[in-house]
Length: 122
Image (cartoon, rainbow, N blue to C red):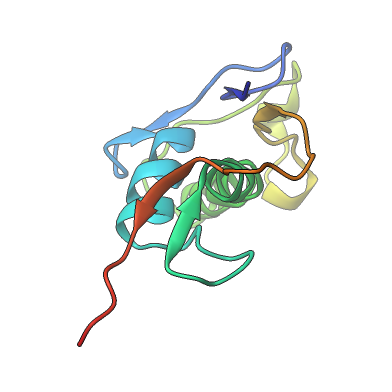
């Protein structure tokens, strides 16, 4: 069984209008699957569920930080704060970030679940 939550229990799952999705959905669908960035361990033209979930879990905090940096440059981006008073902290590197939570057994599977496969070009 695999369980992926968009954020920790004390956080909210964020949506960014310029991305057209929430941060987790964007990392999963747009980057992980469409851009095939989740095919990492091993790079074999297959995206397994564990690869996709690991990629998204690691990517979401970076997406949020990038969004906050855009806000710091004067773009119209909502203030994002999980800790009261933190919206006053202007440096994105000193703010708490949305961190998805992933639960699954990290044992070797006989038949890992493949989410996407790229055909080999002739």
